[in-house]
Amino acid sequence: MKCEIILDRKFKEEYWKRRKEVQMTLIKWGIKRGLAKNINHKHSIGVLEKIIKATKKRHPKNPAKYFLNGLNYSRIKHGRPFLSFINTNITDCKIF
Image (cartoon, rainbow, N blue to C red; front, side, top):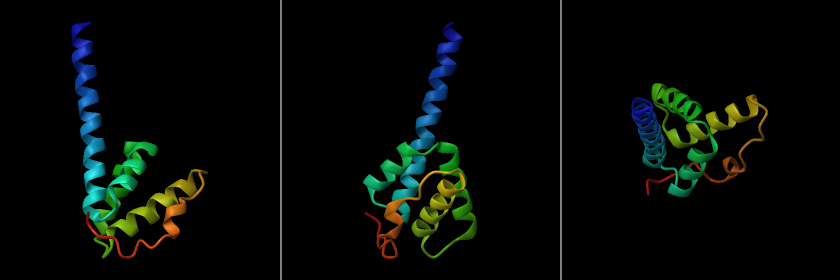
């Protein structure tokens, strides 16, 4: 019983570290904090990490726009509606 609690606690700590790392990467790329938080809560951590990994691999000029387009493609591919904030002016993302 005690061992299960310790393992569960470690898993949860690791999960939240992964979530925080994803959110900090999005903020570093120039996505506003509120939007990064919203994306982080609404999508699975595995999908976000996969898209971040693909974005880092390709070294785009604007990683925020590249990430958001990848996220949008992933949503459409899995039958969810596309994100409405993609149509906003993301080309001039700045680090906040």
